[in-house]
Length: 298
Ligand code: CP
Ligand code: NVA
Image (cartoon, rainbow, N blue to C red; front, top):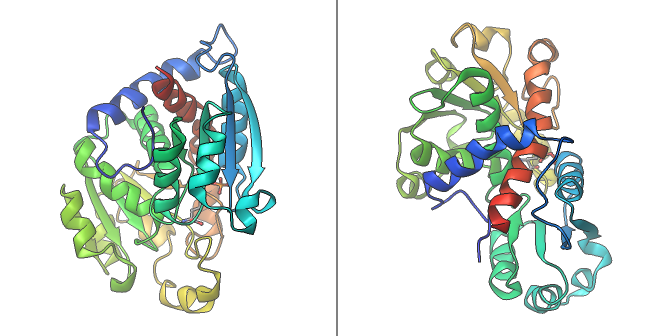
């Protein structure tokens, strides 16, 4: 049984298989598409808010000729304390696949182990694997192979999005630099576990120097709202703007997983200057996730 639960430990060849099939799936959209989810029903169980992930999975499942049901976890008995292990064993007898967005990585891993159906991580506190596979596809679509390139992440370097970048770096052989205050950098254990060519620094200029891609995400991830004021103060110097982009390669891509908070992690001018690529990135969630579900279904 294949799942996509995290990029940690995922072989580079599997990532490559998904990335390499995405272009063909994108090109065939609406023109004689394959039907890998024919006669299947997939459940999407979300505990956190979502725009892109929800819409791209719902559309993607339908385009692969499956049926989809969206379940707000708070409307389920889960929200009243029914354990994940019972929910997993019930859904596993009724639906053919699950897409889950929640807090604890352990919950989604428990669901996958007990449901016995393909399970996809649609974001946990630890990782956002579908996002980072999409981001790499988007980079390669615009600039060619990512191996040997320099990807710089600026901002909260310890949340789910940069952590998935950390695990992709060794597997796909690119250099990753993280510019963040020390307390917002990945732990030494995480970096040791990931291996690869990764450096963390508080110095933005060093991190962005000649980068091929400069990436950011929100400063206040879902679940961290109580820390908003402190985070805005501590991360204030880690904004992507024209001054920062002057250190990168002239054709560097600016990327953002969205939602974007202008004036915080990125300024309005830089966001709009790179909006075409950023919205290609958002669109590519659909195509990459169709490739992921196709990969899981075979
Ligand atoms: N980037 C992303 O996952 O967006 P949503 O939270 O809107 O799904
Ligand atoms: N790090 C962000 C990503 C949102 C897509 C969060 O977890 O809220």
